Image (cartoon, rainbow, N blue to C red; front, side, top):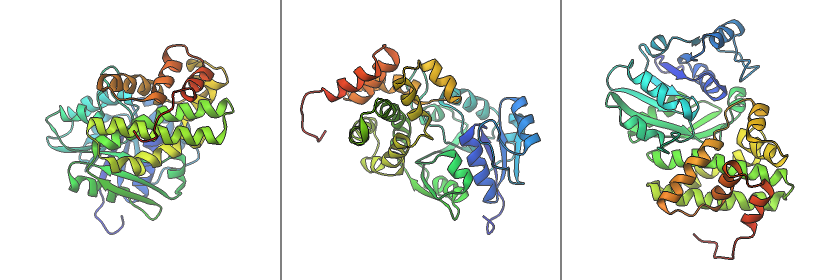
Length: 336
């Protein structure tokens, strides 16, 4: 970003993903204010010059400033990027909108739905009249690899092409490619629902069902994510792109995925609570399974992998019984 005027970006959420994005943006030349709601965490970030709790080993560039003061974080910014877990999104959105000047742009890298209502996150943002254009960032991108500077590509979706292009420009670098889209719904659905499939893939792998089963789960998982996305108004091509197939393959096949690790832990006989403690960070697929299951039932969308994952997580079905129920379904044509 050396050829552009410096921009100031607030990144709200100092977990692994928010920190990785803050580091990327700062390396690209932006002045970045990384906000955490915990002063004790900010004290550690300032003292250590890195996020040892969630992304250890990656030093902050000089232009990255940690803060627990939300008003300071949002003062005179060109872009606000929310990267908190889905359960905290509505609260951070509300707090931020009360501080930001009227018409400010807002974006998020949160993957999930609003707990309790199942709303997509853009639906929450659209209800706030003071917010200007919005954008969502999603795609196959582990935080550690972004922080390492490994080649990565993702998608920025907004109904404002100018906003999508501007945000993609902030993110773009020699090792980071940001594509643009206008399909906010499709990108949000893909980013949320793929976490369910990762739990299922982890369960299947943990039970020793092998590569054939994993490939089948990914393929059929994509089919049911697409069915739901189309029912909600998403575009079919989104689900074959980075925010659909790309993110799905990544999170189902690599143990950096917390959702896949949740499935592996359940297959070992751990409870959800034990698995959460072992993983040590948010596992978005657990609450997302509940919300997507409800949404699919309300819309009449057939989502068998989601159904069995829901039964394992919320109805006491054993992981082995869940996989066997999927494999034992009646024959049908592959399409649909």
